[in-house]
Image (tube, rainbow, N blue to C red):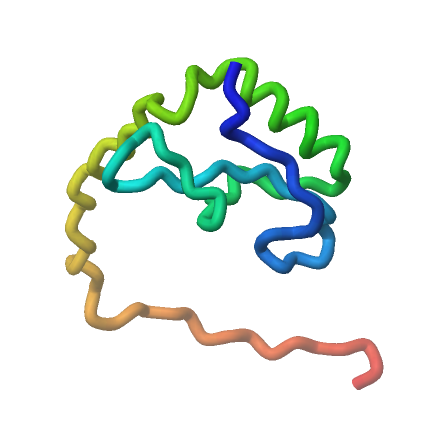
Length: 104
């Protein structure tokens, strides 16, 4: 079990509806085992501090430590299909029939 994830009071993203957050330290480029608690990454924001503590405890229970490999980036998206250009130049719209109201 690690202590990489921590619950902190107050919103880290300045959203008024959150009162706590779960953060983890940024790792240094020099040593992956060295953590920088001055620079943190926000994992999630919570409505209560108790929720943040539960989430941090669950993450720490399954986290092997700061040397865990980072999550790999998502696969590249497929090339989108080209936009259609075979639309007609004009569209024939039937004339609109006038409405008749009962008060007329």
